[in-house]
Length: 213
Image (tube, rainbow, N blue to C red; front, side, top):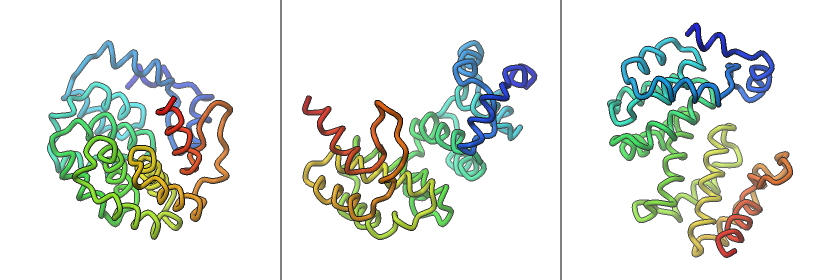
């Protein structure tokens, strides 16, 4: 914890806090610490219990993803707090855990929109890798009905799923683009030069163009 405190940079914290992340540690330096520590599951659990965002990010880098029990991960997602911790927990840990599918189904229907966004993130991965277990038309129905009014983090996750369906599945592409155009979610989101807009119709068109190129 002392080492992490020594890596704190007020300028980085200021930028991160604009995105809801309360830490000021350069992530490249954090990854260097993780590389030195290597995998240490017990230390990871202790770091997580501190509640400190930088410590939790480090914990997610040094943990053993398959070692967590289902209920442990469920408690962690509900306590993740900041967007970065939530994102790393889903992508670096839950996706590699044997309980991932069971959690995906449970979280997808959770009344907490932040927990539900984790279910949608796991579903988006299935859209690309295991679409046969999903009802893609049904997912588009839910997105069409609920995305416009969804809270921000859930809306982002649903929008990503919408784009992924359009990118990966030509048979559903026209409908996915149409839903994006009608709902206009993230249409005006500021996008840096060289980056692809998160607005689903633009995102889908760009990724399909790259696939064909």
